[in-house]
Image (cartoon, rainbow, N blue to C red; front, side, top):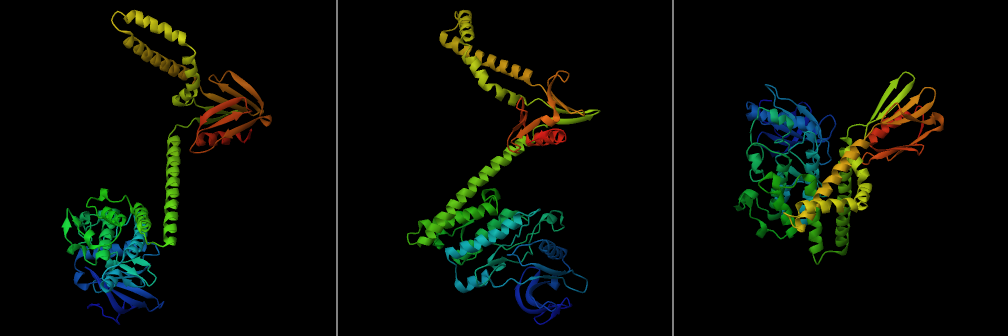
Length: 481
């Protein structure tokens, strides 16, 4: 192809161009018809003037690579890619997003109202949440009205991934090439980098453009932020939301698109509840959404708490080990952690301190007699109390350490079961395996459980992993419930 394509031309031997949809820095996108399937498609052709520029070629190929792995209803699906050759321009084909770009809609309408902008922003955030959740995450880097297509039902699609950045870009020869549109780009993108929160900044600028009808680059600015509050008539909650999106420092923006969507929903409901003329149905729906989000936050908090508990218990060293020897199976259960043993002693330790005032009185009198010549009672008595608490703590730790002994469970081939505590040579015969039952309680990853042998032996502070191993070791010989 020695010339720039024109409508009516067949490219890649398959796609009949119909009309130009738009031009970017490196290529032109056309609406076309796939001659094989008769489907409407969007065909992006790399501008022939840039074929000698390696950076533009690499950006074009990166766009195709990224689009090939994206699957989202608001991103037109990848269809085909024809690589660049010496005598042929590259062609990238996607499904054609139905509708018109927000740029065209804005030119006709002048500006959009608050409800429209919130609805569109939520849909874009839905896409950004998906892109940010990929491994590795994908950064669009060119969010703007021209790249958001809206159909007649108000459904938005995100198009033109020509400035996209993903993990491949970190090893790219492009280096610090700036990709995007001035006025919508976050400060870090201007420096050639970018992260998922950079797209949040561009979305904030897009919302300002839609609400004011003025390009962000044409608005006055103060401290790297556009001055726009006096040009819009929207609720303070939405203004605060947009201001958070366009913070110059990425860490000052929302943590991610999910958090931004929640905040946007809160801003929408706050605006509805503050509107004295709002419809009753709108108010009820806003309150229901707020209640639902509060429940979701509580559930998320409970889920995080549970996951933290599971992770904490998973870090504990395993206590159950199985040895299979000649004629028997020995299950060794290591002593509990010292903190568990101390927790077990707290109650009787307090009782011991309460019911032994005599020792405390003797020590107090002795300390007073020894130090009384130098100290007043106001000093000697508190000092004695402190020493008494330290002494009780040391006694508890020492006694807990003495009690931390392993358990041994022996299952012989002749059907006998014995349990030992501390010394494997001194075991207590529990009986024959077929008469014995073992109950494993609370096999929950977030809680500690225990094993009870016929109600006579209780082994505590076992994790779910320990209980699983213990059950597997005993099940072949003993009834485990």
